[in-house]
Image 1 (cartoon, protein in one colour):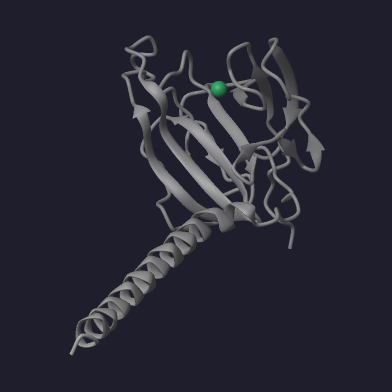
Image 2: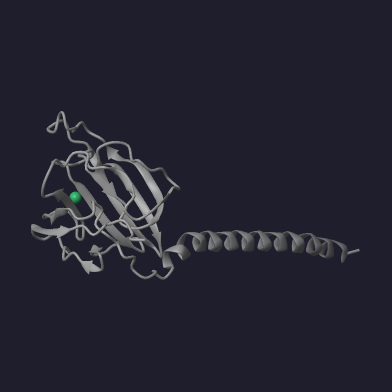
Length: 215
Ligand SMILES: [Zn+2]
C-alpha cells in the first residue's frame, strides 16, 4: 500500500498543472490578440495620397499661415476678402466623419463678442477618415458641426462654419492632414503647401480648387 499515495498525488497534481498551463496559454493568447487588434491597424500601409482640395469655397483666395509654437505642418486659413465668421468649411476630400464635436472647451468668442473669453483646444471640430490611413481635421468651428459621426461626406460638402471656438485668437480655420496617425505636409490640388515647420512665421496665398465635379 505504500505506492498508493504517490500515485494518487501524481494523478491529482498533473491535471491541475495542465489546467494552469492551459489557462496561462489562453491569457497569453488573449494578450497577443489584444495587442494585435490595437497595433496592426496602425501598421497598415498607407494608401496613395488623396487629391485633397483646400477646405474652402471654389475660386476663393485664402491666406495659409503658421507661426512659432503652432505645430509643424498645421495650417491656419484666413479669407483674403470678406467676413471670416461663418464662412463655409468644406470637406477636402470624400470620406467618413469620425469626429464631430467639441475638443477642449468652446470659450465665448462669437461674431457679436469676438474678444470674448478664449476656450481651450480645438473647440467645435471635425475629423474625416479618407481611407488608406489618411485623415483631415478642421478646428475652431463657429457652431456645432453640420455633419455627424459615421456620416459619409463628398468632396466639397460643407461640414461646418468658420469660427473662433477653443483656443483661437481670431476667426480662422485650423487645418491638418494626417497619414498613419502622423501629421504630414498639407497638399492641395496635388501641390504641397510649403508649410512644413513652425520655427518661423509663414504666410502665403492660394486659390481654392475645391470645385464641384464637372459632369
Ligand atoms: Zn492653428
